[in-house]
Image (tube, rainbow, N blue to C red; front, top):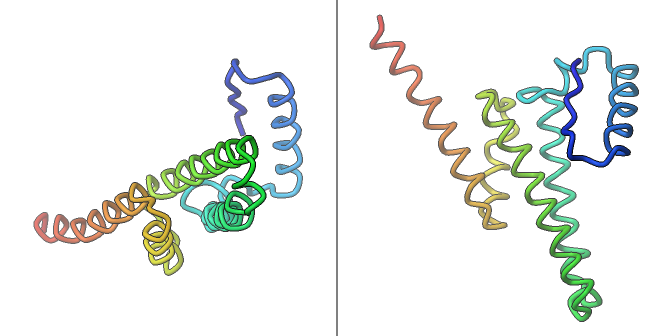
Length: 143
């Protein structure tokens, strides 16, 4: 597995990631088939990201102690934004593969994105679903 690290990241991030990759490869020799976009493991990351984000917003960011303290609220909002951006990136990688894990992702994507006003995820899901519908038509026309 090739390690691409952006040069503008702090050195400790590069070192930590290299160490984490080494550990993952020891634990999961088949990591590329089990955890890359389109796999069940990658979908698991998407689901866990969703749960972490929901927990953050519900139990931390909206906690009265946070709401009453402007500095804490700003920090909590920044963390919430970072969690949202992370979730969006994982979702985009998952949907870009064209292989949403059967029976798991689509309903959850749509329900969660509507509940949390993440319409960009909903749009990606609909784009994926539409591409699935169009594909059989193309094949019929080719025959």
